[in-house]
Image 1 (tube, helix red, strand yellow):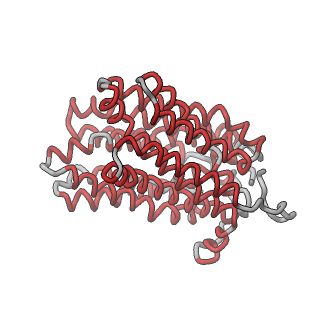
Image 2 (cartoon, one colour):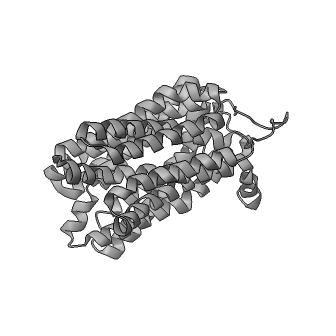
Image 3 (spheres, helix red, strand yellow):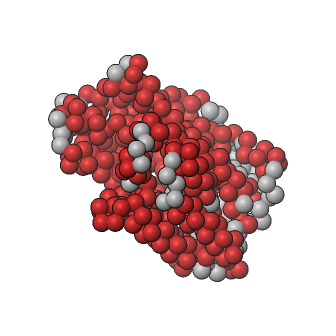
Length: 396
């Protein structure tokens, strides 16, 4: 991994940008169902529009990654931030299913423009061998931003309707671009990026990157399908209240964030490749524990185990993916890896729907455990990479 001068000053700006970007996102997305209902649109149309948003992020995150090391300028980052803010405000003028879907797709394409650069900086600014720690800290600000936006969003909607969320969300996002733009980019030694094209994509066909990208799809499928179902499950099986279902999701999110923060240095010492199976084993125990739970408390404990596995993998798989990628291609690698995460986010709810219809609701948990077990088998079956040569990177 390359070292980036700038230390705590750069990190502080990166953390603020992450916090604000995802707080702004949550402020708007959390009230989108109310907007669709207000316009007389159906739940199916809402789901289709969100799928287009997800496809937008899937389609462009790799592209933004290929430009990541060229984005180190205030003008470039500020310009893309302005376009993103415009796409957010445009949601207020979209009043039909088609227009809302188009604008959400554009927003999805733009909102992740800085993500590959931010993630790479978060992993590298602290110095060599600290990628796990960096991702754990970055994940904490990401999660706090999402949680804050999710909590405040409905209150803003009650005060001033959808436009209130758009105004505040856009303002928060605009403020969050200031720390990113203010980074002294002339003193930050970003790698010399390879030009986007077949060569840079071919360089990602390194065996360990392909393995990590495959594993992250399994991870996101398991985690998103289970957590999306937990609220309904706690009500239907244990007759939980709406407030109690919030505790379940809160436990899942907090557990994942705190685990990522706590185990980052451990992952750095162990090596990401050796640490990955433990994360999937925790997902298996958590999913099966939820399946056999006979009380609400038991389900909460199982959820915490599942969240621990998610937090573990959140600081493991990206360092594993980049371990053998040359610095010039790491921006593209982070972006493409993010696209595989987006793919898992799309496939997880689809898995939930298929299992719910064909097998029944409770069978989601053993199916999720089976997917995590397949991921463990893939890790064990994959050959251990040869030691890195003198010109090759190796963070392990």
